[in-house]
Image 1: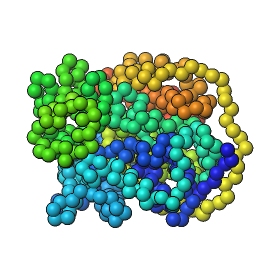
Image 2: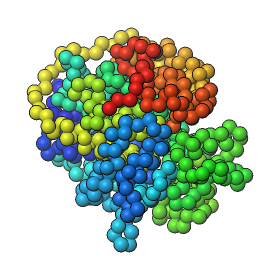
Image 3: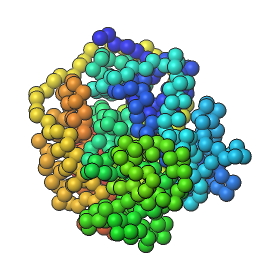
Image 4: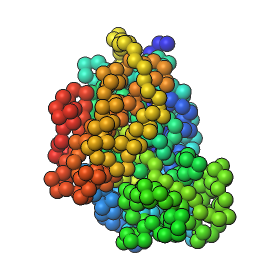
Length: 514
């Protein structure tokens, strides 16, 4: 297939990619590529809502403080300040765009409460279907303004003179003056996850092979309440349910979070570990929702998940377990979303902007997607477009190797690099991955199944190495052999890795970056 050119190429169709496309479409020629349908993304599954300090008793400084507390002070604070200060205006902008936000009888935003927030500041749309409301609105606004290329797998980023100039896919080459990664996370590396099936870490792997710096890959957030029945994850139970009074209990009726000051609204890492320990002790864990009236009306999406899993909503005792939910780390970017490789940007979950620290505050993810899509768009709109030239060089297929199954990787990542890790388990994972690394660091596969598996193995290796290097416990990274939280020697230090960086097992510990 002949190459296609554009001013801006966006890979991924979650809220970050869609918002960037919307903000650029009137001034730039935009192509948006997605490996599934444009409607499929982690953003479209987001239940909880979006955080913004818009209540009468709230202020962006309170939102700022809550974000730092949840993420264990491991942030780029200037980026956090930008995030929380832009939130109210972006909520208003999305309302004007047509997002059907939930409101009170007086017409004000209906504000919910979630874990680790000090105020009611979570804005919802259609109850627990906020993400879908956002993505549907943006997709509708983009019709006829951008080129959507669906069911297309990105194989490798194309470079010329050390600049990214596009992507090679299973349907040909797409060239552009700027390429934006908006590919989402990597929840499929684990056995239980809230993520869509497509979340196989592709963007992390694409960026790494192109020479971009990745950071904070050890910080994986596990959501405490994945509906878990018949040894199978059935979907996410939003933190908003606990915000409305639901309580975690074991099969003996004991409240799981009774002894914590914030009880069931403690940060996600704390609640996830508490549930994890209950399961290790042989107990089962349920989310008791009996005190919530009109549950099907208030949480229609969750109710459908429960019905699909044959859970009796009249009893409203939902079996739950923690599952991989969000990557706080990713492609290291500046305040404009620029990666360490020229003409390559990253936004949304695939990026490490420093706003989440070691543990993302609930409902800051959709917000991050909007804020940094805006920042990238402003940066690109100041740049002149120039002709994009054909790339002559193509990747060579280098050898063949039998890759393991996704299930075998997921089992090991869950056991050895999961909610709790230690040196022994991480070393087991490193040794298991070792035979595949020389192959998966190159783009040597062509079909979707093998490309995804190679990407998963590569990202698993980067994640494992980072977790092995960080000899402390902080936020979503818990080392049972270093259980004392927040070692001052590690404060504001970031573990970074890139293809060209050979130091310290391809990981370098750096001080804070602005």
